[in-house]
Image (cartoon, rainbow, N blue to C red):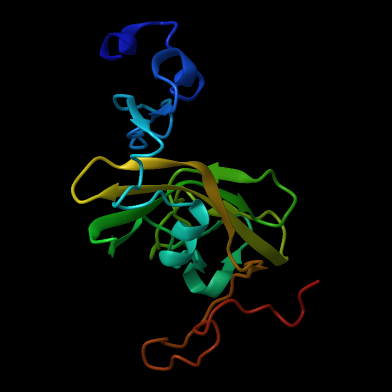
Length: 227
């Protein structure tokens, strides 16, 4: 088995089941390297283990549904300025989705669960192509500063912003290696609204620090005589 790791004909652990393991045993992928989103997954040393031994008196395997519910995965869309923005400028959205872990005990065996977001699928609602990122983004205090998840709207109006987050699930017993659970978890966040305005330049004599309610101090304002 160990010598097959450098064999170009080795293929995946999954399709080498019958080739390298005796009857009643299977090849198990132990780890996946997701620290480089642009790289192919990396697998740890394959392991043959019997069905009878797996979970006998120890921690059982987990399903992705169990990972989702036990870790209470519920990603949300956040935004700067409550989603208000200006056309032809960056409007910043981001998500609170991150790596979630849970420690528990099953049949007397310490077990950890982990869910890791691996891709974020953004749709900004203005007809542009959806964007896929490998980071959830972050808040940005500076106006019109691009972030990995911000977007420029070319027209004014209200737009529905949606996000789909894709997770992988893993578990491990005690301090052992993380075991990848086959498949992915796909969750949709509740949509939010982008409220996009046009800019109007005017001379203002008021001091916003002295009078926060003065014209131009409370946020985007549409001129009454705007066409």
